[in-house]
Length: 277
Image 1 (cartoon, rainbow, N blue to C red):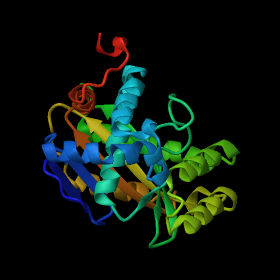
Image 2 (image 1 turned 90 degrees about the vertical axis):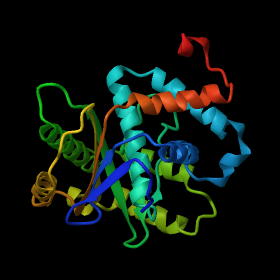
Image 3 (image 1 turned 30 degrees about the vertical axis):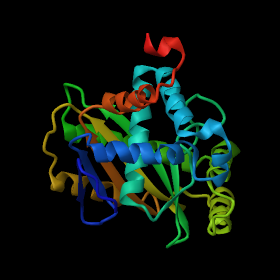
Image 4 (image 1 turned 60 degrees about the vertical axis):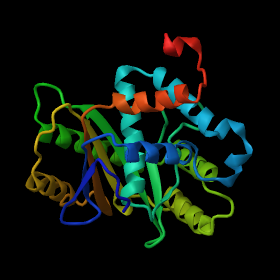
């Protein structure tokens, strides 16, 4: 696990279940975002280096263009999924990402699975659903986290039980795009993905991560007991083959956007005029 200043990472009974509080947006965390942004947005293919379109300059520019085109609710989900992508790499550096943050076909909201990671130790994939939200005034932190987790479960059940080709075609397209052609695990990765797409028919055949991001200005204590009971409640239903949790809490989402936007300005790159109006 990567250690960064400003992150408080708490483990529950299983080390794979994490509750992460982003206590400060530290310089270390900012640097990590900058270092990982291209691979998160587009993948790890060596071919990316051949195209200026995938440079850091153009990546931060494209990030802002996509963010600015979204509704307020979509902006929360957009930053939330970025944080989930970042934290998955921080807590699970041994896993191989099989999906890009950007929708590779167009700038609209990505269809299919939010994230897919390959686990070489068990030779299986983890399918990840991400839900983000503001706390609101009439709900407790614990109730909001529970609501986000239950939304993850509901949507993953629907996606994994969907035998239509579009969900799996999207996952395969992303994997083909993000995996480097010289990756030694490539053949195993595609064998597993193909098996999941063609042969696995039940939701209980799949391993999943439920990833939630709660944005709330005032950190309220969330007991380990609550987190453990929530995890146990979901696991005891035996919906999936295995279920891990990544629960993230941060004060606001706007500072992530502001930092990436400042990267555009820092290097004196100009976006379309309406972005800065």
